[in-house]
Image (cartoon, rainbow, N blue to C red; front, side):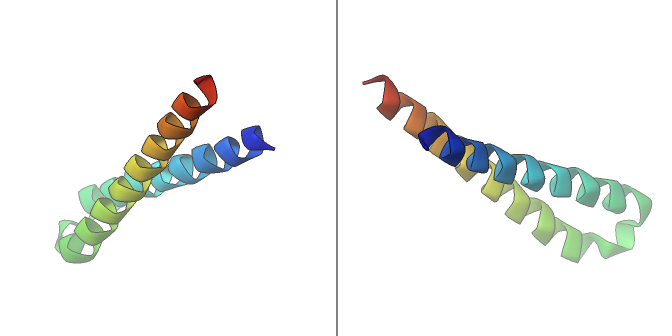
Length: 64
């Protein structure tokens, strides 16, 4: 059960990173859309970072 919860966090982080990479690609293709894409890039970065931190915290709790 605990392993499934960690997997869910990994999937969310991976999805956020994929959206982030796609937003960077769109920004490269059309720099005029910078306002919307910067918001998307910042939001996806925060989601991915928080998910990674949650995984690290849960792993350290399981070791003790």
